[in-house]
Length: 105
Image (cartoon, rainbow, N blue to C red):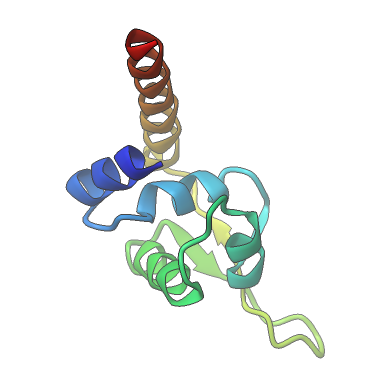
C-alpha cells in the first residue's frame, strides 16, 4: 500500500487521496466515519477529513443536507472522469505490485 500512497502523493498531492477516491466509488452516500472504517490500514481520521475537504473544494463531491437528528455529514460524488482515472490507476498499481512480488519469488 505504500507504493499506492507514494504514487497518490506524486500525482494528486495527497498520500491518501487515491485510496479515498476509490472508496468514494464504492458507495452512494459518503461520510467521514464510513470512509475511515472502510479503508484498509486506515490513515488517521484527520487525514481522511482533509482528503474529503480537498475533493469537496475541487467540486468532485458535494455536501448533502443534514438528515434529521444526525450530526454526520454526508457527501455524494459528482460525475467526473476523475473517478474512472483513479480506479484505473489503482488497478494498474495493484497489477504492477503483484508482478513485482511474483518476480521476486
